[in-house]
Image (cartoon, rainbow, N blue to C red):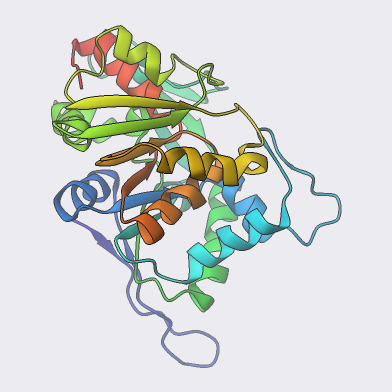
Length: 290
């Protein structure tokens, strides 16, 4: 079931906007069933969108500060784009502690504890109360201005956070949704050949992890500061005819590019982040291909 925020009265006694917050599975189901594009806001996108006024802010690890990028990121948070599902870290905003499924782990962290589900210490506990406060505060600012009524879950491509599905033996449901994003389609991967973490999408195709698309093309982009090349990337994407779906790994640039492709070109586009790691782990752990 989707999670709904009830009306809450502010200091003036007026009702605040009701906004639907989806979970990971609901986000993927909406994308698959309704043909929606996905754009995602993690901490990096929020820093760029909301902290541009800090003179000391110079950007994030893989994207320097850019006024135009910040403006476009803000606009997407406030103004609906047809057939685009904007995703926020709803899960991080609601929890001080996260459960990380270690067989699907993206990057190692300083964990506060461990739990056992199927093998000893296969789930780690990650405490992030400061992050929860950050996401909660930023969302209150967004709520006051946004015309969006639904936000998907930004961690929908992180298999490592699918603890409930893992613990109940329902992880195949998530993997099938991942496959349905690709299956039988003419797909274009817009991504670095040497990503910051994990195997590239090109390598995953060579290794037989991704096998279900009707056809696959690749457009290589830089590992960082992709927005510097935004115009060139847009032109190169347009040079690939008859594409059904575009999968973009490009930090905050992927966020605005996916929305751009959906709004201007009528393409289905996904800002997938480190989805490559989730697909690789699912293949290694379960032998599941996509």
